Each structure stands twice: as C-alpha cells, then as structure tokens.
Length: 175
Image (cartoon, rainbow, N blue to C red):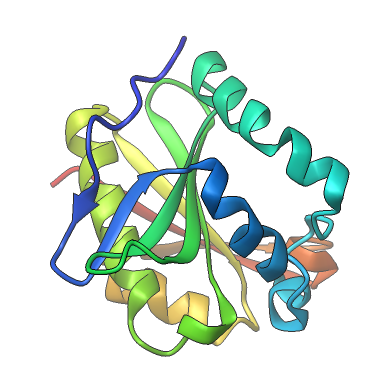
C-alpha cells in the first residue's frame, strides 16, 4: 500500500527530516563512497547509473509502501547532512536505517533524526514497533539506538551488517 509522503519537514530546531530532492543526490552519492560508511553498510557506492535512477527508486519505494527514504538536513541551511529510511516489514513493523555524512558526524545528528522519524512513524503512520539493526562493533550506532530509547532485544550471529559476525537488534514501541 502506498505511504503518504511527508507534507513538510519534521524538525527539532537543529535538523530536519524531509523528502529527498534531485539536488540532494550529489551529496548522497559522495557520501556513499566514504570508507567509514562502507565499513558498516552492504550497499554498493553510487555510480552515475545509480544516481540517474535514484529519484525513480525513491518514488517507487513510497508508492509501493516498501520504504520511506528521507533526507536529514541542517534546519537552517537545508544542507544535506545524512539520509534516513524506514523499511517496512509489515503493516505494524519497520526498520530504521540511517547514515550521517562524514563532515557532519559527531554532532548528535543521528539521534535527533531517529527521534524525529520514530515519532512520525509511531504516531502518524500508526506503526506498533520500530527496529534498528547495527553491527555490534559499531559503537556509534549502538549509542544512537540507546539514546533514542530503543531496547536491545537480540543479537544475530552470522554474516550480518557489512558481513560482520554480530548484528545487534534494538526495538522501540509505542508508549
């Protein structure tokens, strides 16, 4: 079932979570080649072909109801500072995935964006549970989950995020 796109940005005075635009693609593409990003994600870096089809892929994700791909922006400048997505498992559960662009790491952007997305997903979309999966060795993402009130519910052993041996699974539910 299609997901109703955001009518306006979700913002907290520092960051905004908003719909992706064609003008965001150069920043998204450049960040996909960052070694630290590559360390934790399985996605291939974006080449010209991927950039060329990116907006169509984003629109199809919303239309099909599979995902809600969004952008994290500086609330003042609207500069892209990261990406964040909801990937729907069913009508009640979705997984949160995000990446903060290299020049903007270490400033608390990820927890702010995850909190904004979680509020929207659990209230406006009516989801019952959000999951966040991170390589257990990715201490930054583990801290983001904990700061946002997600509870660690499981560890998957075996090739997980970026082929690493243990993936930590966190959950957040409606209060």
